[in-house]
Amino acid sequence: MKKTLIFTLLLSFLFLGCSTKRQYFEPSDENITGDMKFNGSLPSEIVAVSKDGATLKDGEVISKNGLVKNFKVLKSEKFLGEYDGNFVVTDINGTLKVVGSTGAVKFEKALGRQALSANIRGDDLALVMSDDSIMLIKLSSGAVVLDHKVGDAFAIDSRVASPIFINQLIAYPALDGLVSIAENVGGRSARDFVVSNQPFFNNIIALENKGDNLYAVTATRLMLVSPAGNKNHNVDIKDVIFSGDRIYLFLKDGRVELLDRGLNLIKSRKFTFAQFSGALLSGGYLYIIERNGYVIRVDENLEGQAIYELNGEFDDKSFIAGSSFYYGDKILNFDAR
Image (cartoon, rainbow, N blue to C red; front, side, top):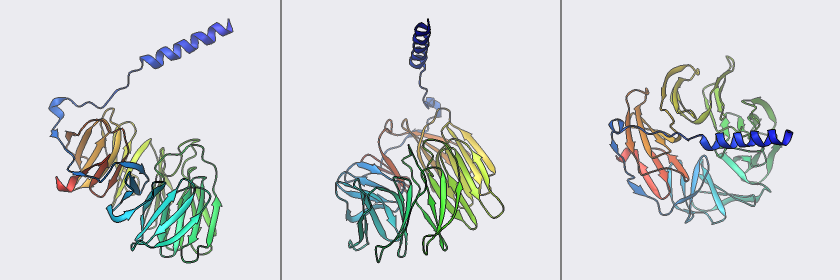
């Protein structure tokens, strides 16, 4: 009897799973403004992406400033980003390399695990590592000032924010929902605070400071830490843009929210079944890349709407820098339209 009941339940789950039809963002013909086409190309396709950089198949890289000239990584290496005029590169064996703008290697060391994000200010190299540890290294001497295991992370989002320097402090975005604050002289821990405590995919995906305020984002929460007190905005977050006195949140249910810096909601727009692959601001408009091959355009106040069709589904690696969307070996520069 017990086996029959279990078998019946399994059949029910299978039936329900097979009968659930996935729904897609499919605007009607009258709501489509027109076509949009890629207007540039890359030397080769994107093979790896970090929060601040993309690596191409031929070894060339894209930073937040665009395609980098006269710099390539090895086939075994991944580009993390450009910081303070330096290029940070890691490999699967845990060797980290910092290359200056002239091409000279400033620092190279086997760290025993892979760096996921980085930042540089002057002689200070701050790192977030794949085992949920944080590091501070002096580039001139190679001295490890800080190597601290924050916690444990069993599954992480590929979007790992970079550490940020705030006066004499460094804010580290950990992989387990914490932000760890350390002193940049001596590496002494100053404070930790919990943003969210989900068991999986709980890493900090965005971290920003503005004035006395610190903003930290996970997949389930936007948190404001300020002298006046902390404030949370709990939603399922796909992406975020900080711009001036505004915050744009792109949610997993197809909503776009516009908030002020106090996390007060100004406006919300819903695009039913939309799956956001990225977004950027250009020329007074917000352009949203929808995974099934559309570009949604609204103004900076989330008013108005234009929807464009763009070359099929985006199911591969993509990267956004400035006013450009990079996908495969193609570029869509919105300023050039």
